[in-house]
Length: 416
Length: 52
Picture (cartoon, chains in turn blue, brown):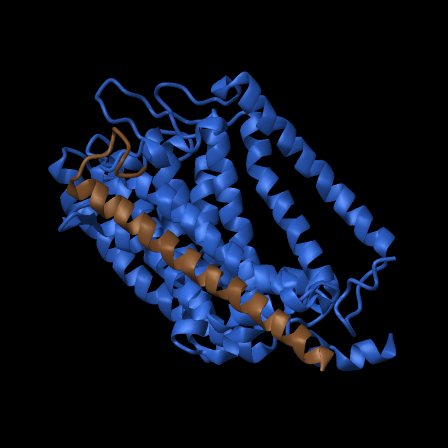
């Protein structure tokens, strides 16, 4: 039915089967959209946020998707600025994943502000003393960059590419992509950093507060570093999932191993910095504010030392080491374990830096605030996942996302 | 926000924030304008060549 739109030579599942899959995921998407409209029309009383606990579950999701979406800017930086040409085999997919992550982040913010029609206020009535204003500026601009990076891939669709203007436009955009990629890297550095930089101004939250270098707290650099380190893990993980679902090899082992190796070294160096930061915070910063480390991990039913161990060792040191050694990196199970743990690790880091800081008691009369999100928060947090699956499915079906697909699946396709 | 808006102030905060924003937007705008204009030129050139 839609064979004229499918990339030449590529095999795809029958159209009814594709539509059935889309309908199932679409139902989840509609559930999320329903919850989103509830939040918009009835207000933020649909969430379990209150005056004490002002971050909904979706703020964690927001920071998590921005972190794992970092694979797009970092892979773009490596491909277009550092000229690592091997990454041309995965850059399209990295861009699509980044596009999904950042559009999801903007959607989450549109829900979070409660009054999306006033979203433009942040540009017109900007508070130029707020790091989050800078985050909003950079997020919007970087989303524009990702859209620009995604457009040539869309225009390379079999039918669209027959239109002369679109063909030339895609070609010309490829020609100047390095300029867009450099702009994207610049914007990403600042918004990833500023999300981490928030910790530097949270004097009233000793669990989050970090020391500075000039105006930048250590977490500014740690957030940017972690996004660049773990973002490629997410790109590789989604690639592996897509390969498992389609039953095809889509990216060569050489490309996967190269990106995994770079990610491994980034994770390992990040973890060294993160451990130094944690030790300094635990030994110097927190005690100077009258707190011991035990205070942050005891007397409650959920947050124990296990979360610190899980974030730093299981989700950081272990994947880093698995990826830097050739033997483990080239072992498919070890590779899959490492990239999965890496993605969990960075999401856990954002959880700790967003939700645990709100839960820790600050005043002597405070108690732990263990937050249970409402179903509307859960639905709106799952919404971007359903949207992402659908966009990846449509892109894979109709766009030449993986340049090596035909070459890597020659024997299999010849028998079909 | 633009300098002709009543809320604007010529201070370092506005200069850094909006300088950065307009700088990024200008690069993206100029880059896309170049790509679209060149694509239009190439398309017209192709059409012209095909008539000969």
